[in-house]
Length: 71
Image (cartoon, rainbow, N blue to C red; front, side):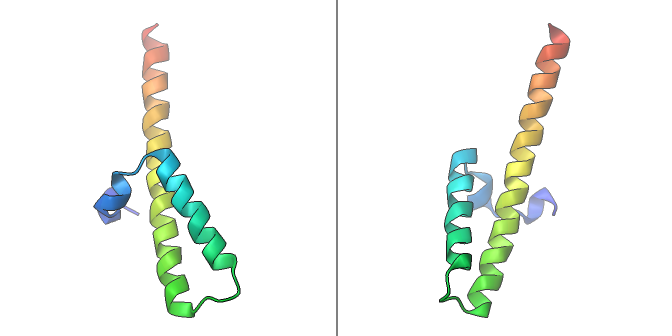
């Protein structure tokens, strides 16, 4: 998923905020009272949050690598 496809409200989340929302979505998806349409929307949001977290980790990794190489 390209960065442009991640909604602004997700892009602005911290790692902790994104993780907390993922936990909430997973709990909701694991419950017995879920309809298919809501589950599809929740799953798409989950993918977007996951991609955002992946980008945050990659960015941090680059920062750490760059700092290590400069030392």
